[in-house]
Image (cartoon, rainbow, N blue to C red; front, side, top):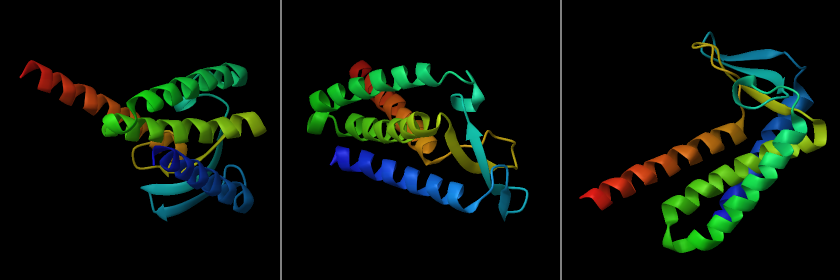
Length: 149
């Protein structure tokens, strides 16, 4: 099941990015909710928040290592740790989604633009990674509370 979740994230991520590339000019912005949320066609050659620009092969190597680590952990955790496995499947799907962009074009397609708070533009893969990491942190906190009780 966890591999299906990762595959669904990859498919949704790649489909939404394809729609943006196919239907929008780079830099074009379409307001969904004026001054709050826009679809903005953007390319990022770095990591989160645009850091480490033009380090494509560094990200490729890091992503391969992360994906291998996640797969090994998923095999070990499996059904015995469902929260961890769910979180890792989200991170796995997001990492592979952005990895596909980096390998094929050298840049990641971003398009979700919260203009209200001037937040960096992001994509479905970024959301999956963020939620997955958040769930992992939550699991660590809950596990720590259970052990100290």
